[in-house]
Length: 369
Image (cartoon, rainbow, N blue to C red; front, side):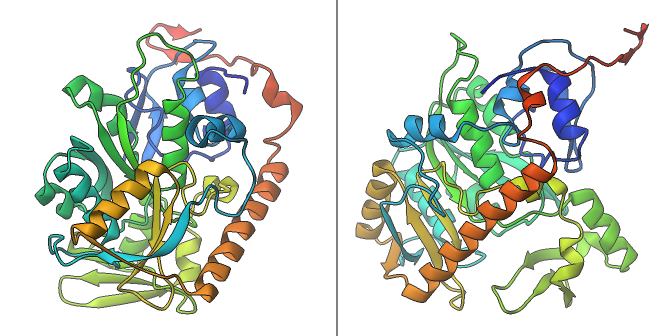
């Protein structure tokens, strides 16, 4: 992977509207910031190499290096990555009660890892009104406050970039595939910084086909005369429902999923990962059984955590139906295929990307330079 700087990142990703606001470039320096689901530079920077470029999950990801780093083996392009075991899961009888999207597996495992001392804090995605925001939490109560899916772009990994300054030494991180790829890039220390310290203790990935552009979603809701402040929860039921469900304070509203897909950023089309491959554990919806999750165990650390959680009543497991695994394999393979085609169509695999971008003049308070 040839690493460049913010000029190339802005031209090749931001300039083509391919950023999915994962937050991997935010709060590394004073330049990249996030606002209402968008990431932008607030000052110009002329570094020839930068962590902003190196961590980005949309630029020339070296999958073989990630696989060697996290799984000690070359990358094989299987539909959903490295798998030790795949099964059904849901929170156990000894896990705290809360408002969960499906089986509550993510919250149960995060709380259990915290109580067992495997992690000393967790980076999760909360909401400020309807706008997703990263949140660093260190108590079961706070973990439960962040439960349920947001379905919108969120700069969650920005929280990882600042957590070390607060004294945390072992973070649990929960996120979507693009966020997890950005985190994996970060953990590889691609610029070989001597001051680098990987404080990630546990990585839980979420299944994700796409996410919604937050700003466009707010505009969409306002055009439908929906009070954004009244939204309590949102859900996308598994196929064949093809609807998007909003739970308001006093009603439930449904939209055809095709209308919501129009709000998906172009950057989602080049993501090849359905199940968050670069993680210890991956969790998603189980079709046809809303009270359960699909759980993919990828690492020894993840397997040990799951076994301990089961033994202590924090988690319940069951065998995944063959049809469910077949459908997941098909969906994951199709996402990889679509991503390759979209990347080729956008020219992201061309020779030009192996060379520095042509510099453009930037306006500053001192004029153009």
